[in-house]
Structure formats: structure tokens, C-alpha cells
Image 1: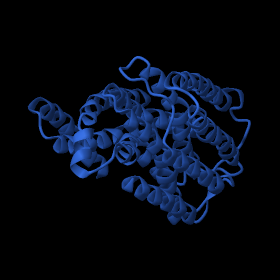
Image 2 (image 1 turned 60 degrees about the vertical axis):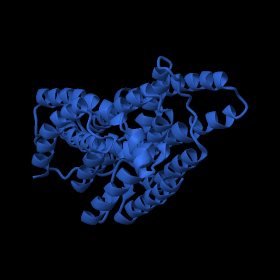
Image 3 (image 1 turned 45 degrees about the vertical axis):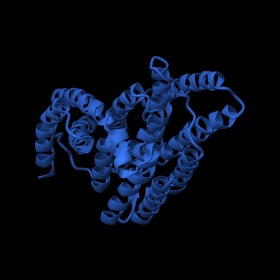
Image 4 (image 1 turned 135 degrees about the vertical axis):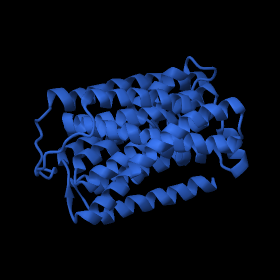
Length: 352
């Protein structure tokens, strides 16, 4: 039923976006149409990556889901950079980290925990991801902020480019470690799959074709969405920070939001955790550095320097996630704790 609704929304929303763009409809109307359409397209991307996950296994599946989910975020951010909305881009990266760790992780733990009293996932993956989370957010994001206080703009940008290259190299090395050199070395303590043979919804070829078409559609709709930000912000009294942290992050990450929660409710916590935490690592260690490098070819370059509220929120989200996930088990109360933290930060960003 939900899939049918999303299908209708895609086939109505994409043509409507074209018409609205040509006819110059109001920014509010355009914003609503584009946001709903992107979320609907993201559901197709989620279903396609879920089909690929069944064929490829939890690690590759989680990585694919995070990658194509983050493709939406990357596309929206590139258009925002082109429009000179650097504050929105940095805020959306913050929102992605908070959204994936606290909202997606929290909903996965909570809804999965309501259905199953105690859920398990790979403790080795959890600990490996913990180290990378500390590096990606606390080391690579906080340090540039502190050093940039004593630097001019040119030196800050040079430092950002250097850090970005290091982060991309480490991220790719981490994938090589998990998927090649140490693949299968850390076996799970208990199987998290329920033993049933699951058939993918779509064949590999069809799933890849749908992912490609969805990415093209998202690119077009995202460009139109970005042009509405300033007018919508003025109309509702939203700051650039709130639009980036909450609105863009939720719309841009809709695919992995739904996929991770569905996986948790099927007791496939390895995939759910891989999507939530894997997506955060990809945003912090790959998408953010890539955007810094892309911005060098844009009218205004973007240094990797966040505001103090953004850094404090991200660091807190990382430490809280590590503390509840490092034992390789989850329950509904841990999920509720993560959700409560997200709501507290949401209120703070709204009132800033």
C-alpha cells in the first residue's frame, strides 16, 4: 500500500516539478512538491538497495544503501554550493550526522526493540565504527575549528583541503579493510538473520536501473528545491542553520531512514546499524571532504569549519551513539534515549 502511494507520488511529482519550474509557481508550493517528490523517489532507491542487500549480504547492502541515500544529499549540496549557500551545506552535513545517528539509529532501536525485546548486531563492527566516528567528527571536524581561530581565510581553506584528502583516503582504506583484507575475519557471535531465505523484490539488473533513473530524477528535483530555500526561510522565519540541519537532512536522507527502520523491524540489525552508522561515516569522511574539493571550482570555496553549536551537537551524538551501541545489543529504551537527544537538539537549532 505504502509502495503504491510512493509510486503515484513519483509519477505525479516529477512532471509537476517540471510544470512548476516552467510556470514559476510560488516558492512555498515548489518547496512542498520537491520535498515530497524527493522522499517518494528515495523510497524507490531504498527498495532497490534492499533487493541488492539480499543478494550481496549485510555489509555490501548497508554500504550500497548508505551510498545511494547519500547521493541525494550530495546532489542537493552541490546545487546549494552553486547558489552560494555554504551555511546551508555545512548545516545539512551536521543534520545528516545527527539524523543518521540519533533519528535513524533511535527509530531503528526503538521500533525494532518494541517488536523484539533484545536485538544483537556485530560487536566487532560496532567497535570498529566507534573509532572511525571519533576520528571523523571529533578529530577531523573539531580540530579545524580550533586551528582556524588563528588563521586567515586562505590558510583555513588550505587546511580544509589537506584534511579532506586525508579523510577520503582513510575512508577508502576503511572500506578496503572491511570488505577485502578482513572480510569474514570477525564472525558474528550470534546470527541476526532469522534463517528464512528471502527473495529480492527486483533482479540485480532492474534494481541498478531503477537506482540510476532515481538518481537522475533526484538531481533535477533537487536543483529546483535549492532555489526555494531563501524564500521559504524568510516566509517561515527559519534560519539557514535550521533549514540545513533539519529540513535538508531529513529530505536528503529519506532513503536510508526508511530502509534502516524496515531492517530493524525484520530483526536484521547488522544491516540497520550499517546503514545508520555507515551512512554517518560516509557523510563525514567522504561526502563532506568531496564537497570541500568541489567547492574549489565554485564561485565561493567552502572551508570545513562548522559553528560551535554544530560541533557540540555532532560530538555529543557520536559519544551517545558509541555508549549505547558498543555492547553489540539494543533495546527500545536505548532507541528512545537517542530520539530524545535528537528532539532536544532540534529545539535548540530551531530557536537559534
